[in-house]
Length: 148
Length: 182
Image (cartoon, rainbow over all chains, first blue to last red; front, side, top):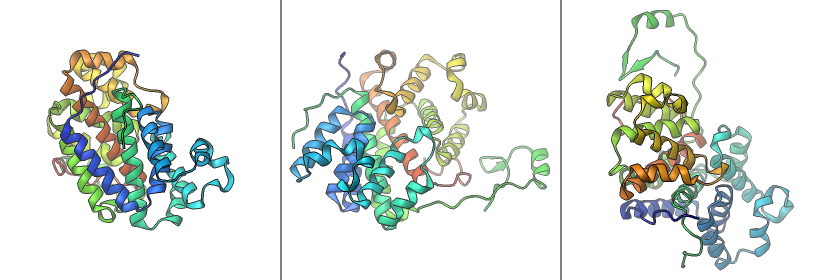
């Protein structure tokens, strides 16, 4: 694979980190944030982000089974809670906008499990991982560079 | 609130059109799902700062084309309303905005740098179809200096972020006045 730029404006990187922190803090559920971050990164095929968020999830006590089955969460029975499933469905809808909008059913299912501020921050976390995915995939940042 | 006529910069542009519209019934305007600016003000402020950081060093003409093209692909009505109005107010032509979704067949409306930026925008916006192709990246890398290129990537990332907030919370288009968010 040909190398691409490793440059990223410091002001931009700092601002994106601040956005990440604000969205995660407002969601107030670090385990769920990592599930969302891993699922977004799977859909966008971001190797760097998957490496990083799998590492964080494991350190936070997430199980190997729940990480391995995340790609098939909809068929994984009660391995994920109803709240997590609603958040994962919303993650998929907001990540794949090119197929057309965010379905009412998906939005309403999420709205049942989160209050309005929680939902706004959940959309924030989904948007944040989509942003990191874009920055890392477009510059082809290699996985493994993340150190906690 | 409903649609109130075709306007550019807040002025009705065609009096004949305005006259016929008196008898035209437009569909009802939808209500946004969530007022995320109020519910997550910290996130909104961080987005505004991120936007400011990303636009540094990006050609303003290219920036608006990038924002319009990404918003077309992501179907963000609010963002299209905002960025088409901002582009027109900054002197962009109606023709170039309309042709943007068919740029592959209207390349002669744009410069080589603009086309490279638009191609890169599409690749980074539609990540789910698989990575950013080498030829797309290399065409952009040949025409933009490294710092310019990474700021272009940043700008593409940020409009994708605004698109996600706009679409997920179903913001209604039509109320933006050019220059409001500059």
